[in-house]
Image 1 (tube, helix red, strand yellow):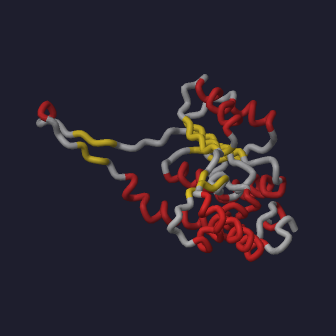
Image 2 (tube, rainbow, N blue to C red):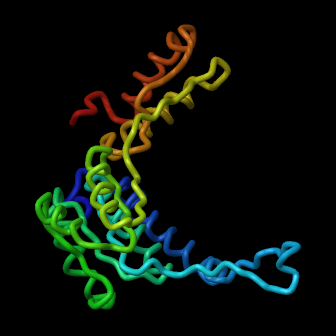
Image 3 (cartoon, rainbow, N blue to C red):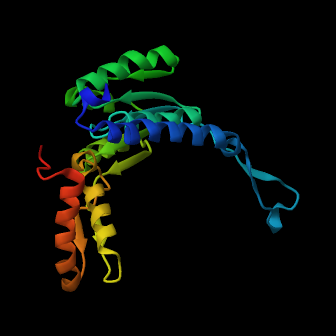
Length: 232
């Protein structure tokens, strides 16, 4: 499904879409009992006769809006967190990859309570109508322009949000580093998932002396990792 729904190589799909979700699930299961415990609060001078603790309660109904570049990972990982925290959730997958969107809408109800978890499909119009409703928390992954729209809609209901937005990621290369290693790592990060990763390196910062060494190393790394015709 992943291979035919998106353009990732099989290895990239397994690593970023499958293994990361499994790791998130294992991490949550291993630590949930600890995360759920009340946190004791130290006594102050005026609280010597009292006791205090912090208890974590669910928000309620969470809206998760997933992007298209990692349509499975960024759909399931926030959902794992929402479930672990005791919330109900409505999840809006990206409409860009129809096969993945359809699969999520068909499979999720088979494993989770339909009264507590739902998948909302559709494009901009459906998402806009969805945001008109009051949610207790909104988790959005996507671009800054759409993030502003989500935050504006949430503000009408004073709904707290998490906005995981794309940006520019500089990569500093010092004069003392291993040029070959740097080149291979930069190329891998830049070209992974065809460059469609919010934390991929966007530009390099280095001295003129390092630039003269780095450019040939980058060309060699691109040819080695991506082939002589990376566009193919």
